[in-house]
Length: 167
Picture 1: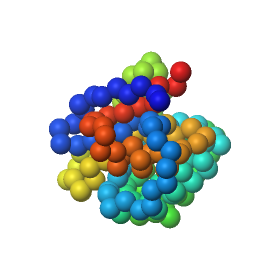
Picture 2: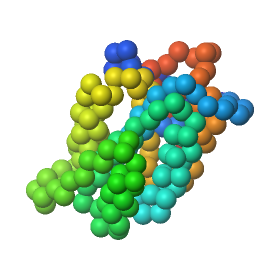
Picture 3: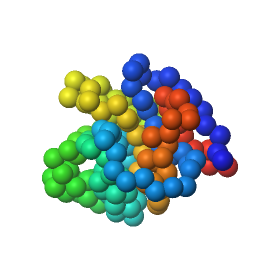
């Protein structure tokens, strides 16, 4: 079993910082609403896997929203995400082409800036009915949907945020 860190990030809301693996069992549909969030640039082959994983997870919940931030991709990521957003009206794409001086920030600052853009979006009133927020690593090659749902549904653990220890 992987260790879990609990963090109180947002009052009365839950953040699930992708991905925790606890249990192995099959769960059918859930009467719960989720938001899948992520930030990315030049995701490459991860785009296809992310879309498939999101779709598999979203098919198992009552309702969902997807909010992704992208900036300055040069490998087709931007076009892929725009096409995905065009085919799914529950997908919000925040897309920016930053100026060179904006890109001069260090990597951590750029990631924080992108994450804050996503947080600004999901803090809007239209997301109040979505108690589970999954901050996903968009270039991961595999999401275990069953285990994500087991974790969300677990009565054994009280949590506000989780992440997987990759050791």
